[in-house]
Length: 420
Image (tube, rainbow, N blue to C red; front, top):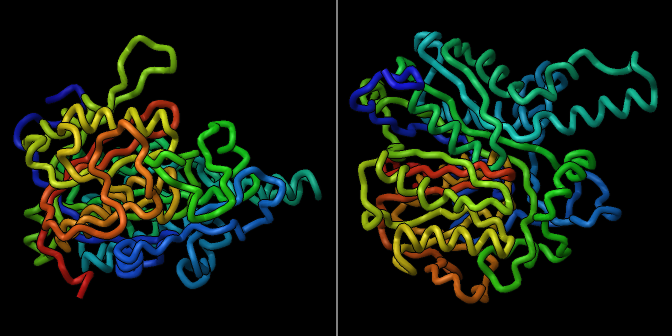
């Protein structure tokens, strides 16, 4: 038995059998993937509120999402937009996996989600009620809708999933951590895990909370607002949305007759030292540990889906770690998140979904936007158009504000119906 209480011995292979996407690139796997291949950006001037008095005016908003069409009316008024996204994505992922929770043992189904700021918009509206109309106007659901674990709870209740459930708060890195946790849950007896993350912080309160990082782009032109690894990089555009994935054991998926998008081969996480520390950044060591966990060498990796903050110092650090592990310019690097902005808790989960789609389709999507590589990075950034190189193994990287650092290794599966 390990220190984490996980039985020692061979790990049960974990496969992703279903994907649900709610993102600025579109609602649904097909629409998202088509946007990614076409380089169709979801970045635009913020419309959910008037951003005129804010330094950040460009973000990635989910187009055409109506909670009433996606979520039961009772839940729509009791929960925040980030939970609406997760409920919709979870339902889509289960349908994509052809998995009916009613046909599976309720204590063998689990839910683990990532969250960064909880139900920001719901909380803002309740505070407005408090200060404008008084405490009697604050609704009872404020006590749960803002909570980081609200999404996990609502998804598990809706689908009767009564196995181990939890939430991971690690900002942008949380989506990878949630998927890493899904493997642990499969090792300890769960049969099916809904894992991933969503976020919805595009409201005055949510945006104000993001500004102190100093990492957000103040560029008003959506085509110039998020340019990682570019000489004009000046921060990132925020976004909303994310993805939920159905993760099962390979044997369990086979018994159900379900195909899969790919396997989760390896995972590792670490924590970057604070500024001024004499300790080195951890990203390179995290990548190496993820590769070791996957049982693959650096030479076997066909593409890296980068964290790509868009802040020059952080981009240089990431490029340095990639080069240290894989060799300068020896592995294609891409960051399709330039089409959506950084989705915080939803970002890494969406990157994993995109990586699995990429491997299934045999194509590396390009990084839309950057056109003038920053000097000295020495990475093979895929720009201008997708590359049809039949990649089989991908590494997905994510770093969250405050030092969270994670890496996930996935390989190709047998699902191609998403592009038919």
